[in-house]
Length: 272
Ligand code: ATP
Image (cartoon, rainbow, N blue to C red; front, side, top):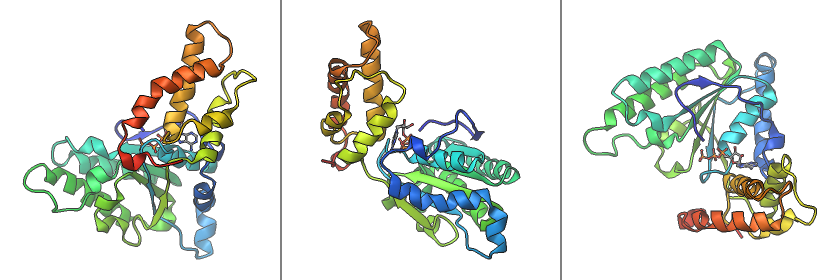
């Protein structure tokens, strides 16, 4: 997902209803919602609470959406940052940003801090040769320091997303840091049906359109791809002065989006 700088945003509130086909994953996260709603209660009960959650999965599978929906469900602020922004920065800037991010978050706790593309700062340290690594390492070190520096019970939950868990520095996944991992895969047919239904909620569909059929026609499509498919279909309808979306528009949208799906890396294409 896109995001710039350190931002606390409330563009719109997302809930688990916006996330389709990830029931098992959102069940695991319900515990975090409960915690965010009553950090003190759990603290008083002496319960061990999470600090960091790693969401792992291919692009467009709803990692950002899921993180946002936890904030929405718990009704707490959502701070987000994309780690890839740090890569091109001058030494010290990224670390400063991370410090600022946590400072703002702590003042608004309970809340969620979301770090997208954590692999861009979180890859194994010392693995590269020569220049360009200092900034990344400093930023990563600052993140580790911040996570160690707050108690799990202070109400800041850090959620990070990646599609490259294999290259992450092991320091990140140590207990007390990102010690929970949730894997998200490309949606299967049933999940694609549910995702299409979510994105059809706000669109007038012709009665003859059966979304189940469209789920069958879209193997390899991620949630983001399916959203895009519905959107392209709506644009075709508008262009042709139609007030409902029919199979014709969906077929056009499928043609237009299919090329992008087929050119994805093979590892991202598997799913019936
Ligand atoms: P990236 O790794 O590229 O940041 P991501 O996994 O964070 O991707 P999102 O940004 O959450 O993916 O998904 C983009 C959009 O795709 C969402 O805003 C949503 O509209 C749609 N989408 C993705 N997954 C789902 C889903 N499971 N249910 C409903 N919509 C989805």
